[in-house]
Image (cartoon, rainbow, N blue to C red; front, side, top):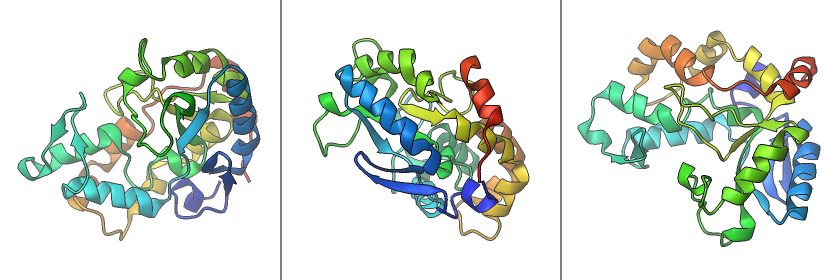
Length: 238
């Protein structure tokens, strides 16, 4: 995967699917459709609500949160007011839930956020909150099914453990044969190059804290389970 693909500045590695409607890495198409078919047989509509996201889109999310145009939440999901916060606190708050442009795993096309469309009205905004995937939650059934079967199709969850960086995201699935090599290639230097000269809010704070941000919020994630380790190391991206 090229540095432009790693950082969302190229979509040469991406395929647009009509059903389910999403954009993913070309190597993710077959396993995603196979997993979706198996989930359907079990009574679930495994529906991606987010897939590939390019650099420009991630930049718009970042700047929107900095400017108070988008919701800014604390680690517990409570609403914050950016205008009343110190700049470094704003950066930390954003990074709990949203990546720096150039650093999002969604740039790779290996990541999907999923809900169970069978129990959620079509067209209604998806409630991506941990309680909806926990026992008794609206997506608890799909969550349990994914616990048992996602690895059979090469997928795992990179944000399960609270490591003091990105908050746990049970809805976030990663296709390990693509994401593991991508992570190895996603160096601090690659990220710094992607951000050079970009009109990004709070650029001075980001510049001072970039090595810390990289360590805490980019590489500080759960590893693929042992059964996916070999396929992840053995895969090559073109």
